[in-house]
Length: 120
Image (tube, rainbow, N blue to C red; front, side, top):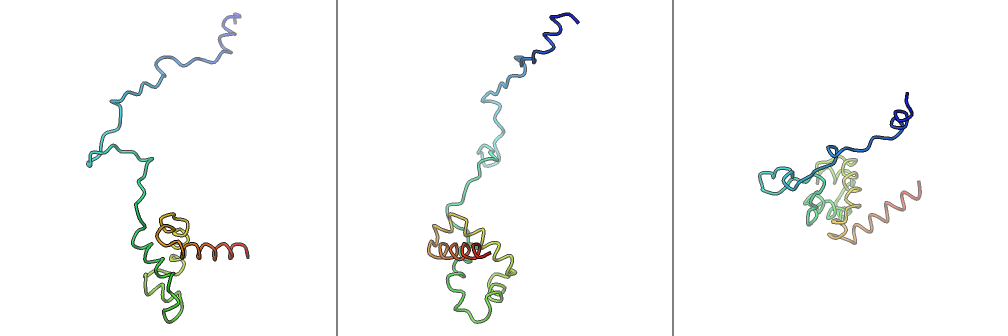
């Protein structure tokens, strides 16, 4: 192998002009039926808490006023198992919309969750 060939073999290839991204405004994805451009990365957040979230916070505010065990009240009120209810509640406590909706209840439940976590 000649010396020039050896040197050329060690030098990494430079990108050619064909490899350069030539994005043009006309290359944008097609609009959907509503006429707005599709952008999967940007998800719009709802302006307020959904109805189920509101019902869960209202239930946590006054569940002890109902007769019987809390698990039974959960089944009767929401038609959910206690495990699923607590999964939803836990996710709700981390939602800023829930905090905006009922800060007192959310803060109290967050404190209870933190104290239980510390005891473990």
